[in-house]
Length: 373
Image (cartoon, rainbow, N blue to C red; front, side, top):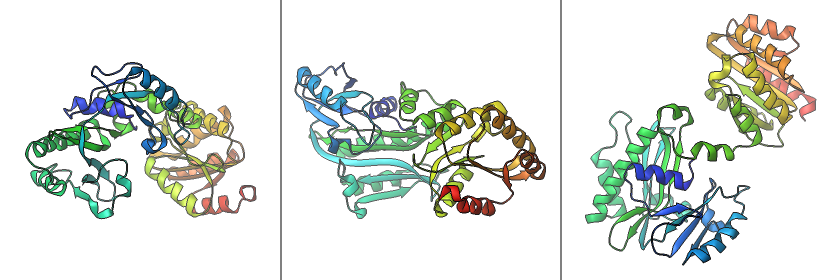
């Protein structure tokens, strides 16, 4: 779940990270102008697309809001407008914590070249410090960041507090990314988070405190297909609206591997669906997923399941029931492997499914199918 800026700053404030005074339009912060107005969108580089404006008073702010509400950011309109006090900026720093999938640990990122052009900064300007998942954040990490950024005194002391707070936020909220760009250093040496980018792990939502409006804003950014799949209790990701194939898969890891293989085979993937915990929730639940797939209108549906502990014949019976509820159209191929897979494949074959035990022949059949050319 990617939070909007004002939602991320709600978390920042909860963990003691300094933020500017702000409010959602039509409210304005309780401070004298000038103000900065920010379109609340998930897409990046909004500042270069007119998504950040300045206003000296409420009247000018209202005019700017009307203009900003009509803007489109990669097809996304602003969910709302966030109004903040302007900051006295002496320096801009980039600071973030992210999950490094290759190293399988958090990594602390810092650059002295923060702001809207940070993506264009030289590669050597970004410090990357892996954090051992068992040992956690250590003093040498923060010392290295302070030296890299060249901060000391009051600014250095506040930087220590901000880094500790970011790390606490990442752990407690199960965040995959917490980013401040820029972390503003004012003329008096104090630091303030002028922006917030926070991405939370959806799978851990049950064990963290809710962020107001987060689920609604996340849902509003889903496509109709993704929302329909979510309503069925699964996870759908739309890849290419003009694609031919939708892959329905029995787990997140297998879903990513399946997508990679389909793309390597030069097949155009419309979307992928991770059944996750709903993989054995019953034929009625799977039927709702099938309804979402049918509504998307793929020319082929690829069901890929590798069951390590659950029984394949149970899943096969679910697929047969789901097919009665929402018959999949076009070519339907099933790769089924695992416990009792022979029985499961026999059941599906009797119902007219194209069934495979191994992934290779299934992909080859998809590739050679003339109707997908």
